[in-house]
Image (cartoon, rainbow, N blue to C red; front, side, top):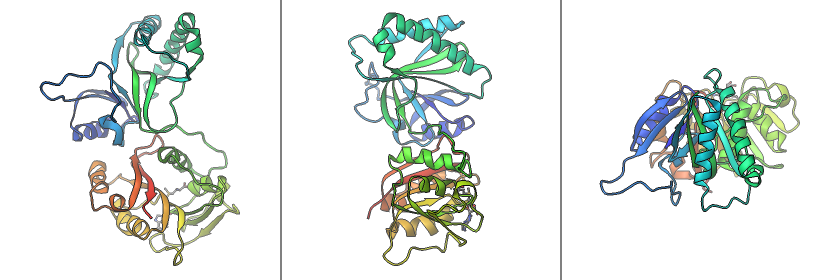
Length: 349
Ligand SMILES: C[S@@+](CC[C@H](N)C(=O)[O-])C[C@H]1O[C@@H](n2cnc3c(N)ncnc32)[C@H](O)[C@@H]1O
């Protein structure tokens, strides 16, 4: 399998794969190729079987994993497009495509010029596809499906100018680049918007949200935009679309001291504090989840000063508040995360 991660996080992805028992074969900017060691007599399935989730299903760093990828090499745009077309046509045997299907190519934007090369190959491939199978070409969607899980389509990764990996099956972590909003007061806004997709749920009109560490207000603004009412806790000022927003009540308080009124349950807990994550886990996550003060949560842990995979192990330990009190629990290094990961879930009430 070939897993893609945010540029600069390859070593953490590699460690995560190794911890899960995978054997790493190679890595490059934004990607790691690994395989599952098979028991002595077992043979690899001809096609990546998705009867059960792959080993990467619950990992945090992979954003997209190509399953059973084929490596193709070509010196020119046309040579790569022709090989891609041959691979795709051959893989279609016995398959009928009747519905829209993802036809997605990815590359690391940090490698200068690779985006142009990928666009040129995509265009040449699209021509070949249109000529041979115009009905299937019309159903191609050049975007990943929303949400996480298994997907079937055509997934292409440009490792370099003359080297691509391609697969028909992929596993999606759910991360994706989000559209900005001019009224959003911070780029943090993009994180919470992306977190809703990973969770598969977002605040609704009339729901209540407490936002701990809210300033300048990106997360609060995101919830208010959907018609939820927000209590924003932070000693810092709210800005942009969060400032003076009639759905947002700003309270200049310490997030560690704030508690709901007796019997009050918030629909959502948002927590994006620049604080030591163990401190947040012990003093915010534990009471909020154990006491059932919220129904759903989006929490961001900054791992800048702690070992991210060590922290992850603690989050997943049987006695952690997440394991004890949460369901539908997911952790991802989001497309919009930096030295941090985001935890989403529902509280067992
Ligand atoms: C990364 S920013 C939050 C950004 C916010 N989610 C947004 O979308 O704009 C972290 C915030 O946590 C706040 N903070 C840190 N410790 C706090 C505490 N003990 N109580 C309240 N706020 C705190 C900081 O003042 C800062 O505004």
